[in-house]
Amino acid sequence: MTKADKIFKENIRTIMEEGVFSEKARPVYQSGGQANSKYITGSFAEYDLSKGEFPITTLRPIPIKNAIREIFWIYQDQSNDLALLNDKYNVKYWNEWEVANTGTIGQRYGAVVKKHDIIRKILKQLDDNPWNRRNVISLWDYEAFEETEGLLPCAFQTMYDVRRVNGDIYLDATLTQRSNDMLVSHHINAMQYVALQMMIAKHFGWKVGKFFYFVNNLHIYDNQFEQAKELLRRKPSHCQPHLILNIPDGTDFFKIRPEDFELVDYAPVKPQLYFDLAI
Image 1 (cartoon, rainbow, N blue to C red):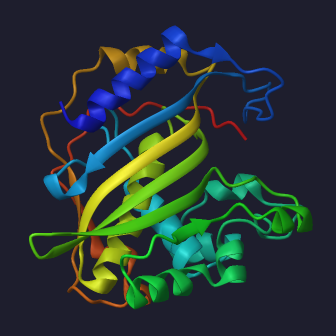
Image 2 (image 1 turned 135 degrees about the horizontal axis):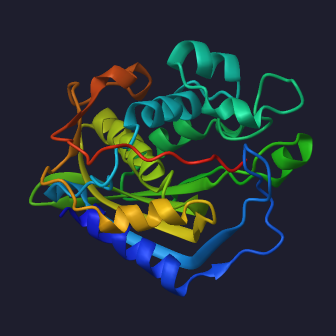
């Protein structure tokens, strides 16, 4: 059992046994009806990527390729344009959050990255002084939220620090998320931000270190309880998956491509489980 599988099962048990039900839930299911959930607050996990600990479960297949493509859309293209996401990356699930026939998700995610020139600033700060303690990406922009409608960012903050260990420099990352669907998107969000961490580390020729993951509201929707029970019954695969970025050290952040990533030794348990998306 991988560390991610152990944490996954522990979180499911905790939510199902100790969680409380949401009230006045905002989301609705695609099939109709209010999407209530059972949740806990303050979930934290730590993975040492340098030791092969990756935050991806083997208990069900995780669509990591689309997750990584989404990261490129947000942080490299710095876009909120759904046509770009659809046509360039063949990722369609964000279409459900299109704002008022604008072809966008509103002033969110990539639009905020572009507005504040966030990536170039972070790269410059790390280049000027890798040991500075101000490497923060925040997508929580009240001014942008007032400009347009749109889903408020769930994974909204990342922070970066470096450590020198025996002559090698390691890049650590912390992801903070206000809300997370434990069964559907927990490992999708974690792995895509590990990919972003790897891109930044590769830009400087550093090694990836630790990945810290904090979720404020971790939940399971009320129409997923049977899937939760099934995941608890499943025995994890014996594989030890890890993500590789197959490019030379020092490759410019903006020249990295989604196809440069490879998820190896990943043989998740099947069949896949399906979920009614909460919008």
